Every structure is written in C-alpha cells, then in structure tokens.
Length: 146
Figure 1: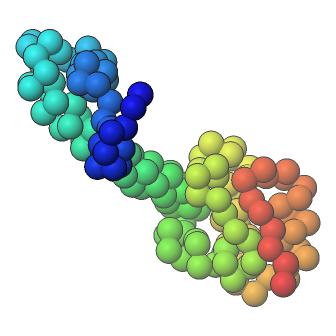
Figure 2: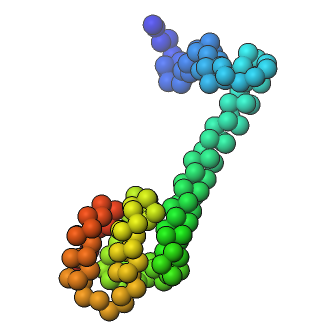
Figure 3: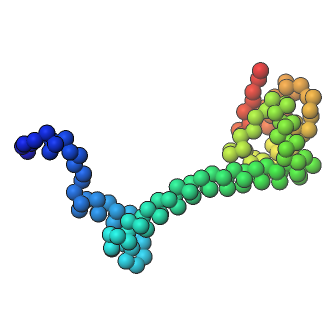
C-alpha cells in the first residue's frame, strides 16, 4: 500500500462495513421478527439487550445476597435469635460467617444449632468456641484470631 500524503497515512481505518454488520447481526440471531435480519433494527435491539444484561448482573448479585441473608435469618430465628443480633454476637466471638457459602439451613441442623449457641454466648472464651466449631467440622466458618 502506498501512502502519498501524510493525512492519508495518519487517518484511522475502521473495519469494513460488512464485518461490522455481521458482528451486530451475530448478536441478534436469536431475536424474533425483523430485528434479526434488518441491520437498523438489529443495532437498536442489540444495544438494548446489552444494557439490560449489564443491569441484570447487578440485580442478580443483590437478589442472591438477600436470599443468603434470608436463609441465615430463618435458621437463627429457629433458635430464638434475630439476624442482626446473631451477626453482632458472632463478630464479638471472633467468628466470621461467609454468607455466600454458609446458609445455616444447608449446613445441617447440628451446625446451625452450634452457631446459634455460640452466638448467644456473648462473653464466651474464644478457645471454647473454637473447640465447639472444630468438633462439628463446619466448612463455612472461618476463624479469626487476634
């Protein structure tokens, strides 16, 4: 390729129109109606789909967190503890509960009982709590020692 002038050499080159159109239509193949065939309609539909997809990722994270918290709340209320008190007492006992991997009902009845009894001891010694949790082999609890 021969560049006769500097502006021709410096200008930015975009991809061919054919490949740009094919990229948009590739994302629109599963749409219904003319949106999967007509480029002008496909551009609008694909843009809208990408916006909704981005928003849905944030909403999914939010809804999963509320689900995990609801599960822990239900398990702690079985033993007479409310969720905020349960979490605060676990922090006081130097136990960190992973909300994602640790929904108490799924861990088993014995483990959730141990967690709630450990959380209800506000002034229990950390060694006692460690022995209690190690004996139950709870995988979802991480011990933090200071």
